Amino acid sequence: VSGDDEARGNNLRYSFVQLPRRDEKELPQMMIEKLGFVTSYTRASRANKIIITLPEESRNGPGCEVGVTSMSPVASCLISTKEPVQGCYHHNMLGLNNKDIHIIEVEGSSNENGSLMLSIIGSSDILSGSPNGIVERNMTLVLRSSRPTTWSLHTATLQGTITLLMGGEDQVENSSVSGPGVVLEVKRNEVPTRFDQMMISVATTVGPPVSYTRTKTPNKITITVPPKN
Image (cartoon, rainbow, N blue to C red; front, side, top):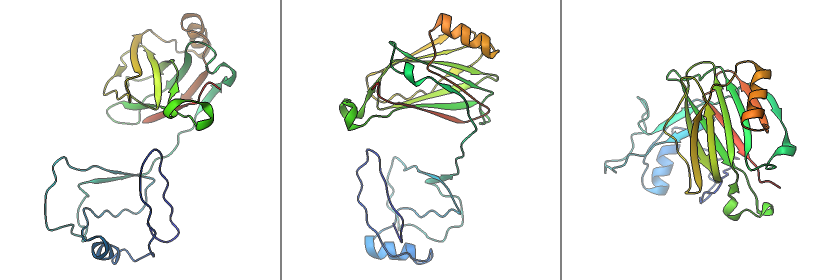
């Protein structure tokens, strides 16, 4: 990194080297002189998320052309924004029962194909006593969308059974669960559209909810699961 920039990593091994800030025209050549080779060069006006996708097969070539004239074949630069969220959270009920129940209500996905990523991340620390920072929790997610939605489930640092309860034409696909300790169950049940009827239905058929979340048209929802204590 250059100038006053910093680097931070989570569960990732990396080395940190700070260099003087250089002009963008000088930077590639300086890296070639210092490292001997540049695999890719990407330029973007601004972003808060950058994804680098490396090809499966390595191709030995003359190196990277730093005269950028086309779309990058390896990098995607995104600007992510938070959607306004309404809802309630009963923290005193967290981990109280054999499962935590969360209700998520959306109008639909902002993606044209109707896909919506649902990411569940266990958040632990050394004081919680959880081995390897993994949170053990059973969860039931009651999902309601006004438009047909394809929910894509992703989990990390979490162990337990995750039950997705949804109705209508919603689907679950391309699910990615990290670790052998996660079990996914999908159940179908029509969820009432009115808020009062929805809460009564969930409380009587599933159990008392820990949280209720409502937003309009996101393309990613992240749920952070703390340890029981």
